[in-house]
Amino acid sequence: MRERQDARERRRAREFEAFAGGAGGRLLRTALLLTGDREAAERLLTRALARTYAAWDGLGGDDPYERTRQELVARYARSARGRFRLFRRGGVGVGVLARLTPRERLVVVLRLYEGVAEEQTAAALGVSVERVRALCARAVLTVAA
Image (cartoon, rainbow, N blue to C red; front, side, top):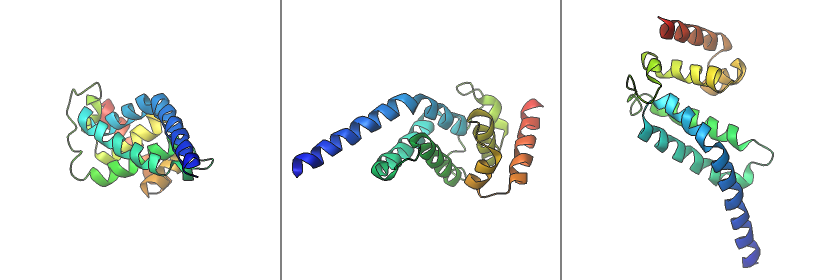
């Protein structure tokens, strides 16, 4: 019995490592776009990946990338009121986003970088689709100015 459990744990670890190795770069870029700070992005991603790993066996047919991205968004949204206001101009190629509010950054990153549909973005943020459109439009105008 113990051998089967050990084999399951090894398989789980291998599957997760393959996922993290393949998706880690893009997820880190998403976290970096949200936070604007390499250390904060790495912390955010580490926590999101830890939650995904903890739920790995229960994912069933769910996409682990989507699960991790949702966790990134949720953790960023909860933390944006405080610690992730570290966004600096000129930091790691994402300085143009420094003019945006945390919520605007979330919308821009989800909609324009990740390609998430308006409806999914609205659901993730707990706002209406119209609000997502307005936030995205305002963010694009702010960046373009």
